[in-house]
Image (cartoon, rainbow, N blue to C red):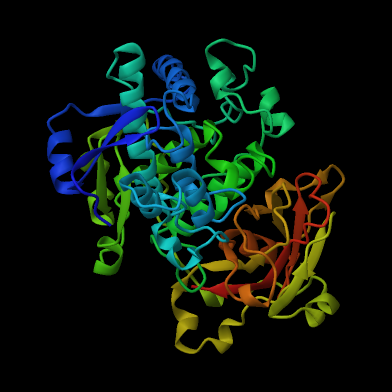
Length: 491
Protein backbone atom coordinates (compact mmCIF):
# COMPACT_ATOMS: atom_id res chain seq x y z
CA UNK A 1 0.00 0.00 0.00
CA UNK A 2 1.54 3.32 -1.06
CA UNK A 3 1.28 6.64 0.73
CA UNK A 4 1.32 9.99 -1.06
CA UNK A 5 4.47 12.08 -0.79
CA UNK A 6 3.27 14.70 1.62
CA UNK A 7 3.74 15.87 5.18
CA UNK A 8 0.87 15.40 7.58
CA UNK A 9 0.13 16.38 11.14
CA UNK A 10 0.26 13.61 13.72
CA UNK A 11 -0.73 14.69 17.22
CA UNK A 12 1.73 17.26 18.54
CA UNK A 13 4.29 16.98 15.75
CA UNK A 14 4.60 16.87 11.99
CA UNK A 15 5.53 13.55 10.44
CA UNK A 16 6.61 13.36 6.81
CA UNK A 17 5.40 10.10 5.29
CA UNK A 18 6.61 9.01 1.88
CA UNK A 19 7.20 5.70 0.10
CA UNK A 20 10.43 4.58 -1.52
CA UNK A 21 11.74 1.24 -2.73
CA UNK A 22 14.22 -0.67 -0.62
CA UNK A 23 16.81 -0.42 -3.40
CA UNK A 24 16.62 3.36 -3.30
CA UNK A 25 16.73 3.35 0.48
CA UNK A 26 19.71 1.02 0.79
CA UNK A 27 21.72 2.87 -1.84
CA UNK A 28 21.77 5.81 0.58
CA UNK A 29 22.46 3.61 3.57
CA UNK A 30 25.39 1.99 1.80
CA UNK A 31 27.10 5.34 1.66
CA UNK A 32 27.43 5.08 5.45
CA UNK A 33 30.05 2.98 7.26
CA UNK A 34 29.13 -0.52 8.45
CA UNK A 35 27.57 -0.31 11.92
CA UNK A 36 28.61 -2.82 14.58
CA UNK A 37 26.18 -4.45 16.99
CA UNK A 38 27.79 -5.32 20.33
CA UNK A 39 27.23 -7.82 23.12
CA UNK A 40 24.96 -6.08 25.67
CA UNK A 41 27.33 -7.09 28.47
CA UNK A 42 30.47 -5.71 26.80
CA UNK A 43 31.72 -2.18 27.51
CA UNK A 44 30.53 -1.02 24.08
CA UNK A 45 27.18 -2.71 24.56
CA UNK A 46 26.64 -1.03 27.92
CA UNK A 47 27.36 2.34 26.35
CA UNK A 48 24.69 1.59 23.75
CA UNK A 49 22.26 0.60 26.52
CA UNK A 50 22.61 4.06 28.05
CA UNK A 51 21.53 5.58 24.74
CA UNK A 52 18.79 2.97 24.37
CA UNK A 53 17.35 3.86 27.78
CA UNK A 54 17.23 7.55 26.80
CA UNK A 55 15.46 6.72 23.53
CA UNK A 56 12.91 4.33 25.08
CA UNK A 57 12.02 6.95 27.69
CA UNK A 58 11.47 9.52 24.95
CA UNK A 59 9.49 7.15 22.72
CA UNK A 60 7.16 6.29 25.62
CA UNK A 61 6.50 10.00 26.22
CA UNK A 62 3.23 10.67 24.36
CA UNK A 63 3.82 14.42 24.50
CA UNK A 64 6.78 13.79 22.19
CA UNK A 65 5.52 10.78 20.27
CA UNK A 66 1.74 10.30 20.41
CA UNK A 67 0.06 7.03 19.47
CA UNK A 68 -0.45 8.30 15.92
CA UNK A 69 3.29 8.83 15.39
CA UNK A 70 5.24 5.94 13.78
CA UNK A 71 8.26 7.00 15.87
CA UNK A 72 6.41 6.28 19.12
CA UNK A 73 6.67 3.23 21.33
CA UNK A 74 3.07 2.04 20.89
CA UNK A 75 3.41 2.09 17.11
CA UNK A 76 6.49 -0.10 17.22
CA UNK A 77 4.91 -2.39 19.83
CA UNK A 78 1.74 -2.78 17.75
CA UNK A 79 3.69 -3.64 14.62
CA UNK A 80 4.40 -7.00 16.24
CA UNK A 81 0.95 -7.67 17.72
CA UNK A 82 -1.96 -5.86 19.35
CA UNK A 83 -3.22 -6.94 22.79
CA UNK A 84 -6.87 -7.09 23.62
CA UNK A 85 -8.81 -5.35 20.87
CA UNK A 86 -8.78 -6.51 17.29
CA UNK A 87 -6.53 -4.59 14.94
CA UNK A 88 -9.33 -2.70 13.17
CA UNK A 89 -10.90 -1.67 16.47
CA UNK A 90 -7.63 -0.32 17.84
CA UNK A 91 -6.85 1.54 14.62
CA UNK A 92 -10.28 3.22 14.68
CA UNK A 93 -9.77 4.16 18.34
CA UNK A 94 -6.44 5.83 17.63
CA UNK A 95 -7.02 7.34 14.18
CA UNK A 96 -10.78 7.75 14.09
CA UNK A 97 -13.18 6.54 11.45
CA UNK A 98 -11.82 8.76 8.68
CA UNK A 99 -8.86 8.20 6.39
CA UNK A 100 -5.32 9.46 6.87
CA UNK A 101 -1.85 8.58 5.68
CA UNK A 102 -0.85 7.44 9.17
CA UNK A 103 -3.89 5.20 9.38
CA UNK A 104 -3.04 3.63 6.03
CA UNK A 105 0.50 3.00 7.24
CA UNK A 106 -0.77 1.42 10.47
CA UNK A 107 -3.07 -0.87 8.50
CA UNK A 108 -0.09 -2.00 6.40
CA UNK A 109 2.31 -2.47 9.35
CA UNK A 110 0.52 -3.41 12.54
CA UNK A 111 0.09 -6.99 13.74
CA UNK A 112 2.03 -8.47 10.83
CA UNK A 113 4.49 -10.68 12.73
CA UNK A 114 5.02 -13.90 10.78
CA UNK A 115 4.85 -17.35 12.31
CA UNK A 116 2.59 -16.78 15.31
CA UNK A 117 -0.96 -17.91 15.96
CA UNK A 118 -4.07 -15.99 16.93
CA UNK A 119 -4.90 -12.35 16.29
CA UNK A 120 -7.05 -10.97 13.50
CA UNK A 121 -5.06 -12.83 10.85
CA UNK A 122 -3.68 -16.39 10.97
CA UNK A 123 0.00 -16.13 9.99
CA UNK A 124 0.96 -19.75 10.79
CA UNK A 125 1.02 -20.58 7.10
CA UNK A 126 3.72 -17.92 6.71
CA UNK A 127 6.01 -19.22 9.43
CA UNK A 128 8.81 -19.61 6.88
CA UNK A 129 9.26 -15.81 7.00
CA UNK A 130 9.76 -15.73 10.77
CA UNK A 131 13.44 -14.82 10.39
CA UNK A 132 13.33 -12.24 7.56
CA UNK A 133 10.29 -10.44 9.02
CA UNK A 134 11.97 -10.07 12.42
CA UNK A 135 15.24 -9.00 10.80
CA UNK A 136 13.38 -6.15 9.10
CA UNK A 137 11.50 -5.34 12.30
CA UNK A 138 14.68 -5.05 14.38
CA UNK A 139 16.56 -3.23 11.60
CA UNK A 140 14.00 -0.46 11.14
CA UNK A 141 13.39 -0.18 14.89
CA UNK A 142 17.14 0.31 15.35
CA UNK A 143 17.05 3.05 12.70
CA UNK A 144 14.21 4.82 14.52
CA UNK A 145 15.95 4.56 17.89
CA UNK A 146 19.11 5.99 16.30
CA UNK A 147 17.11 9.01 15.13
CA UNK A 148 15.53 9.47 18.57
CA UNK A 149 18.99 9.25 20.17
CA UNK A 150 20.24 11.90 17.73
CA UNK A 151 17.38 14.21 18.68
CA UNK A 152 17.90 13.65 22.40
CA UNK A 153 21.71 13.59 22.62
CA UNK A 154 23.19 14.62 19.27
CA UNK A 155 24.92 11.25 18.87
CA UNK A 156 24.43 9.36 15.60
CA UNK A 157 26.29 6.10 16.31
CA UNK A 158 23.63 4.06 18.12
CA UNK A 159 23.40 0.35 17.36
CA UNK A 160 21.16 -2.15 19.10
CA UNK A 161 23.08 -4.54 21.40
CA UNK A 162 22.39 -8.28 21.36
CA UNK A 163 21.73 -10.39 24.45
CA UNK A 164 24.04 -13.40 24.24
CA UNK A 165 22.02 -15.58 26.63
CA UNK A 166 23.14 -19.01 25.38
CA UNK A 167 26.69 -18.26 26.53
CA UNK A 168 27.30 -19.53 30.07
CA UNK A 169 27.22 -16.76 32.65
CA UNK A 170 25.15 -14.43 30.46
CA UNK A 171 21.81 -16.22 30.81
CA UNK A 172 20.21 -13.58 33.01
CA UNK A 173 18.44 -10.32 32.29
CA UNK A 174 21.11 -7.57 32.11
CA UNK A 175 21.19 -5.28 35.12
CA UNK A 176 20.19 -2.23 33.08
CA UNK A 177 16.72 -3.76 32.64
CA UNK A 178 16.24 -4.34 36.38
CA UNK A 179 16.46 -0.80 37.79
CA UNK A 180 12.90 0.42 38.58
CA UNK A 181 14.00 3.54 40.48
CA UNK A 182 17.06 4.56 38.48
CA UNK A 183 16.55 7.91 36.73
CA UNK A 184 18.00 6.62 33.46
CA UNK A 185 17.33 2.89 33.33
CA UNK A 186 13.79 2.85 34.74
CA UNK A 187 12.55 3.17 31.14
CA UNK A 188 13.91 -0.35 30.50
CA UNK A 189 12.25 -1.92 33.55
CA UNK A 190 9.04 -3.95 33.24
CA UNK A 191 7.44 -5.09 36.50
CA UNK A 192 5.56 -8.09 35.11
CA UNK A 193 8.51 -10.13 33.99
CA UNK A 194 8.93 -13.42 35.81
CA UNK A 195 10.31 -12.86 39.30
CA UNK A 196 13.48 -14.80 38.52
CA UNK A 197 14.10 -12.65 35.46
CA UNK A 198 13.79 -9.38 37.35
CA UNK A 199 15.95 -10.67 40.21
CA UNK A 200 18.86 -11.41 37.89
CA UNK A 201 18.72 -15.17 38.45
CA UNK A 202 20.26 -17.52 35.92
CA UNK A 203 17.67 -19.40 33.91
CA UNK A 204 17.32 -21.82 31.01
CA UNK A 205 17.64 -19.92 27.71
CA UNK A 206 17.62 -22.97 25.49
CA UNK A 207 20.55 -24.24 23.47
CA UNK A 208 22.07 -23.77 20.03
CA UNK A 209 20.56 -26.91 18.49
CA UNK A 210 19.12 -24.99 15.54
CA UNK A 211 22.64 -24.22 14.30
CA UNK A 212 23.17 -27.92 13.52
CA UNK A 213 20.30 -27.90 11.01
CA UNK A 214 21.39 -28.44 7.42
CA UNK A 215 18.39 -26.79 5.76
CA UNK A 216 16.37 -23.63 6.33
CA UNK A 217 13.00 -25.33 5.89
CA UNK A 218 11.87 -28.53 7.62
CA UNK A 219 12.17 -31.96 6.08
CA UNK A 220 9.81 -34.85 6.72
CA UNK A 221 11.30 -35.42 10.17
CA UNK A 222 13.98 -32.77 10.78
CA UNK A 223 12.85 -29.37 11.98
CA UNK A 224 14.70 -27.01 9.65
CA UNK A 225 16.71 -24.03 10.91
CA UNK A 226 13.93 -21.43 10.80
CA UNK A 227 11.37 -23.52 12.70
CA UNK A 228 13.84 -25.07 15.14
CA UNK A 229 15.15 -21.66 16.17
CA UNK A 230 11.65 -20.17 16.35
CA UNK A 231 10.12 -22.98 18.41
CA UNK A 232 13.26 -23.64 20.44
CA UNK A 233 15.60 -20.95 21.76
CA UNK A 234 13.33 -18.11 20.64
CA UNK A 235 10.24 -19.38 22.45
CA UNK A 236 12.20 -20.62 25.46
CA UNK A 237 13.59 -17.14 26.17
CA UNK A 238 10.16 -15.55 25.81
CA UNK A 239 8.63 -17.98 28.32
CA UNK A 240 11.50 -17.74 30.79
CA UNK A 241 11.59 -13.93 30.80
CA UNK A 242 7.95 -12.91 30.81
CA UNK A 243 4.65 -13.74 32.39
CA UNK A 244 1.40 -13.93 30.43
CA UNK A 245 1.10 -10.13 30.29
CA UNK A 246 4.63 -9.58 29.05
CA UNK A 247 7.29 -11.46 27.07
CA UNK A 248 5.58 -14.79 27.77
CA UNK A 249 2.62 -14.04 25.53
CA UNK A 250 2.63 -12.87 21.91
CA UNK A 251 0.28 -9.86 22.12
CA UNK A 252 2.38 -8.24 24.88
CA UNK A 253 5.92 -9.39 24.06
CA UNK A 254 7.17 -6.35 22.11
CA UNK A 255 6.17 -3.97 24.92
CA UNK A 256 9.23 -5.10 26.90
CA UNK A 257 12.41 -3.26 25.82
CA UNK A 258 14.40 -6.48 26.23
CA UNK A 259 12.34 -8.00 23.39
CA UNK A 260 14.52 -6.14 20.92
CA UNK A 261 17.82 -7.38 22.37
CA UNK A 262 16.40 -10.91 22.33
CA UNK A 263 15.47 -10.66 18.65
CA UNK A 264 18.77 -9.00 17.83
CA UNK A 265 20.40 -12.18 19.13
CA UNK A 266 17.96 -14.36 17.16
CA UNK A 267 19.07 -12.43 14.08
CA UNK A 268 22.67 -13.13 15.09
CA UNK A 269 21.83 -16.85 15.08
CA UNK A 270 20.69 -16.54 11.47
CA UNK A 271 23.74 -14.49 10.46
CA UNK A 272 26.01 -17.08 12.10
CA UNK A 273 24.24 -19.94 10.32
CA UNK A 274 24.63 -18.25 6.93
CA UNK A 275 28.23 -17.28 7.69
CA UNK A 276 29.01 -21.00 8.07
CA UNK A 277 27.78 -21.65 4.53
CA UNK A 278 24.20 -22.73 5.20
CA UNK A 279 21.81 -21.61 2.46
CA UNK A 280 18.54 -19.69 2.57
CA UNK A 281 15.64 -20.61 0.27
CA UNK A 282 16.11 -19.52 -3.33
CA UNK A 283 12.57 -19.94 -4.65
CA UNK A 284 10.87 -16.78 -5.87
CA UNK A 285 7.84 -17.18 -3.58
CA UNK A 286 10.11 -16.85 -0.53
CA UNK A 287 12.54 -14.32 -1.98
CA UNK A 288 9.90 -11.97 -3.39
CA UNK A 289 7.71 -11.76 -0.29
CA UNK A 290 7.49 -8.06 0.68
CA UNK A 291 6.72 -6.40 4.02
CA UNK A 292 5.99 -2.79 4.96
CA UNK A 293 8.02 -0.87 7.55
CA UNK A 294 8.87 2.72 8.48
CA UNK A 295 12.36 4.11 9.15
CA UNK A 296 11.46 7.42 10.79
CA UNK A 297 10.97 9.30 7.55
CA UNK A 298 9.65 7.00 4.87
CA UNK A 299 7.66 3.83 4.27
CA UNK A 300 9.86 1.09 2.81
CA UNK A 301 8.30 -1.94 1.16
CA UNK A 302 11.09 -4.48 1.65
CA UNK A 303 11.40 -7.84 -0.16
CA UNK A 304 12.85 -10.82 1.67
CA UNK A 305 15.64 -11.09 -0.91
CA UNK A 306 17.00 -7.71 0.25
CA UNK A 307 17.66 -8.83 3.84
CA UNK A 308 19.18 -12.30 3.48
CA UNK A 309 22.73 -10.89 3.78
CA UNK A 310 23.55 -8.48 6.61
CA UNK A 311 26.44 -7.09 4.56
CA UNK A 312 23.82 -5.66 2.20
CA UNK A 313 22.21 -3.95 5.18
CA UNK A 314 25.40 -2.29 6.43
CA UNK A 315 25.59 -3.83 9.88
CA UNK A 316 27.69 -6.54 11.52
CA UNK A 317 28.06 -8.39 14.82
CA UNK A 318 31.05 -8.13 17.14
CA UNK A 319 30.97 -11.92 17.63
CA UNK A 320 29.23 -14.84 15.95
CA UNK A 321 28.07 -18.21 17.23
CA UNK A 322 30.05 -21.34 16.37
CA UNK A 323 28.13 -23.50 13.89
CA UNK A 324 28.76 -27.26 14.06
CA UNK A 325 29.29 -29.28 10.90
CA UNK A 326 26.27 -30.99 9.41
CA UNK A 327 25.84 -34.35 11.23
CA UNK A 328 26.80 -37.36 9.14
CA UNK A 329 24.08 -39.83 8.36
CA UNK A 330 24.19 -43.41 9.61
CA UNK A 331 22.87 -46.59 8.06
CA UNK A 332 19.38 -47.18 9.41
CA UNK A 333 20.19 -50.90 9.59
CA UNK A 334 22.58 -50.13 12.43
CA UNK A 335 19.56 -49.70 14.66
CA UNK A 336 17.86 -52.79 16.08
CA UNK A 337 21.17 -54.64 15.60
CA UNK A 338 22.05 -54.21 19.25
CA UNK A 339 22.00 -57.09 21.74
CA UNK A 340 18.49 -58.11 22.69
CA UNK A 341 17.20 -57.12 26.10
CA UNK A 342 15.28 -54.26 27.66
CA UNK A 343 11.64 -54.26 28.60
CA UNK A 344 10.05 -56.59 26.05
CA UNK A 345 6.57 -56.25 27.56
CA UNK A 346 6.74 -52.47 27.30
CA UNK A 347 8.03 -52.79 23.74
CA UNK A 348 5.01 -54.86 22.80
CA UNK A 349 2.63 -52.29 24.27
CA UNK A 350 4.26 -49.32 22.55
CA UNK A 351 2.73 -47.64 19.53
CA UNK A 352 4.62 -46.44 16.48
CA UNK A 353 2.51 -43.27 16.67
CA UNK A 354 1.31 -41.95 20.04
CA UNK A 355 -1.67 -39.63 19.59
CA UNK A 356 -3.55 -37.27 21.86
CA UNK A 357 -1.13 -36.68 24.75
CA UNK A 358 -2.21 -34.25 27.50
CA UNK A 359 0.80 -33.18 29.56
CA UNK A 360 0.59 -33.65 33.31
CA UNK A 361 1.66 -31.12 35.93
CA UNK A 362 4.43 -33.58 36.74
CA UNK A 363 6.35 -35.95 34.48
CA UNK A 364 4.46 -37.44 31.52
CA UNK A 365 5.83 -40.80 30.33
CA UNK A 366 5.14 -42.78 27.17
CA UNK A 367 6.75 -45.37 24.94
CA UNK A 368 6.95 -45.12 21.17
CA UNK A 369 8.33 -47.73 18.82
CA UNK A 370 11.36 -47.07 16.71
CA UNK A 371 10.72 -47.38 12.97
CA UNK A 372 11.69 -50.76 11.60
CA UNK A 373 14.38 -50.24 8.95
CA UNK A 374 13.50 -53.65 7.51
CA UNK A 375 10.19 -52.16 6.40
CA UNK A 376 11.73 -49.10 4.76
CA UNK A 377 12.57 -50.78 1.48
CA UNK A 378 15.37 -49.13 -0.44
CA UNK A 379 15.65 -46.41 2.20
CA UNK A 380 16.89 -48.91 4.77
CA UNK A 381 20.40 -48.92 3.36
CA UNK A 382 20.73 -45.16 3.01
CA UNK A 383 22.59 -42.97 5.44
CA UNK A 384 20.01 -41.15 7.52
CA UNK A 385 19.45 -39.63 10.95
CA UNK A 386 16.89 -40.71 13.55
CA UNK A 387 14.51 -38.05 14.91
CA UNK A 388 12.06 -37.91 17.79
CA UNK A 389 9.12 -35.79 16.62
CA UNK A 390 6.53 -34.10 18.84
CA UNK A 391 3.89 -32.77 16.49
CA UNK A 392 0.83 -30.51 16.64
CA UNK A 393 1.31 -28.76 20.00
CA UNK A 394 -1.73 -26.80 21.17
CA UNK A 395 -2.92 -25.36 24.47
CA UNK A 396 -5.81 -23.49 26.06
CA UNK A 397 -3.37 -21.07 27.69
CA UNK A 398 0.39 -20.55 27.53
CA UNK A 399 1.62 -22.73 30.48
CA UNK A 400 4.29 -20.23 31.54
CA UNK A 401 7.07 -22.82 31.66
CA UNK A 402 9.16 -24.92 29.35
CA UNK A 403 9.11 -28.73 29.29
CA UNK A 404 12.26 -30.82 29.07
CA UNK A 405 12.15 -33.93 26.89
CA UNK A 406 14.13 -37.01 27.93
CA UNK A 407 14.74 -40.30 26.19
CA UNK A 408 15.37 -43.62 27.91
CA UNK A 409 14.08 -42.69 31.37
CA UNK A 410 15.04 -39.77 33.59
CA UNK A 411 14.87 -41.05 37.16
CA UNK A 412 18.24 -41.71 38.79
CA UNK A 413 19.41 -41.72 42.39
CA UNK A 414 20.20 -38.00 41.97
CA UNK A 415 17.00 -37.11 40.10
CA UNK A 416 16.81 -36.24 36.42
CA UNK A 417 19.55 -37.58 34.17
CA UNK A 418 20.62 -34.75 31.88
CA UNK A 419 22.65 -37.15 29.73
CA UNK A 420 19.26 -38.27 28.41
CA UNK A 421 17.91 -34.77 27.84
CA UNK A 422 17.24 -34.34 24.12
CA UNK A 423 15.86 -30.79 24.24
CA UNK A 424 12.91 -28.74 25.41
CA UNK A 425 9.52 -27.63 24.13
CA UNK A 426 7.44 -24.57 24.92
CA UNK A 427 3.96 -23.35 24.11
CA UNK A 428 4.83 -19.66 23.64
CA UNK A 429 2.90 -19.30 20.40
CA UNK A 430 1.11 -22.63 20.18
CA UNK A 431 -2.44 -22.24 18.84
CA UNK A 432 -5.46 -22.68 21.05
CA UNK A 433 -6.79 -26.20 21.35
CA UNK A 434 -9.79 -27.13 19.26
CA UNK A 435 -10.89 -28.90 16.12
CA UNK A 436 -10.21 -25.82 13.98
CA UNK A 437 -6.48 -26.01 14.80
CA UNK A 438 -6.10 -29.79 14.50
CA UNK A 439 -3.01 -30.57 12.44
CA UNK A 440 -1.83 -26.96 12.47
CA UNK A 441 -0.07 -26.78 15.83
CA UNK A 442 3.66 -26.43 16.28
CA UNK A 443 6.14 -29.28 15.85
CA UNK A 444 9.46 -30.14 17.47
CA UNK A 445 12.10 -32.44 16.05
CA UNK A 446 15.09 -33.76 18.01
CA UNK A 447 18.03 -35.62 16.50
CA UNK A 448 18.42 -38.67 18.76
CA UNK A 449 20.67 -40.75 16.50
CA UNK A 450 23.64 -41.08 18.83
CA UNK A 451 21.63 -41.38 22.05
CA UNK A 452 19.42 -44.21 20.76
CA UNK A 453 22.46 -46.02 19.38
CA UNK A 454 24.19 -45.74 22.76
CA UNK A 455 21.15 -46.93 24.68
CA UNK A 456 20.69 -49.88 22.34
CA UNK A 457 24.36 -50.82 22.57
CA UNK A 458 24.05 -50.79 26.36
CA UNK A 459 21.04 -53.12 26.12
CA UNK A 460 18.78 -50.57 27.81
CA UNK A 461 16.27 -50.36 24.97
CA UNK A 462 15.42 -52.43 21.93
CA UNK A 463 12.49 -51.16 19.94
CA UNK A 464 10.55 -48.82 22.22
CA UNK A 465 12.42 -46.10 24.14
CA UNK A 466 10.70 -44.36 27.01
CA UNK A 467 9.99 -40.69 26.32
CA UNK A 468 9.54 -38.43 29.36
CA UNK A 469 8.25 -34.86 29.27
CA UNK A 470 8.85 -32.87 32.46
CA UNK A 471 7.89 -29.24 33.21
CA UNK A 472 10.78 -27.10 34.41
CA UNK A 473 8.44 -25.11 36.65
CA UNK A 474 4.81 -25.25 37.74
CA UNK A 475 2.50 -24.86 34.72
CA UNK A 476 -0.28 -22.27 34.80
CA UNK A 477 -3.47 -23.80 36.14
CA UNK A 478 -5.89 -24.97 33.43
CA UNK A 479 -3.32 -24.44 30.68
CA UNK A 480 -4.01 -27.96 29.27
CA UNK A 481 -0.92 -28.27 27.06
CA UNK A 482 -1.49 -30.95 24.46
CA UNK A 483 0.79 -32.86 22.05
CA UNK A 484 -1.02 -34.27 19.05
CA UNK A 485 1.54 -36.88 18.01
CA UNK A 486 4.81 -38.41 19.22
CA UNK A 487 6.82 -40.68 16.93
CA UNK A 488 10.28 -41.60 15.67
CA UNK A 489 11.31 -41.26 12.04
CA UNK A 490 14.37 -41.69 9.86
CA UNK A 491 15.42 -38.96 7.46
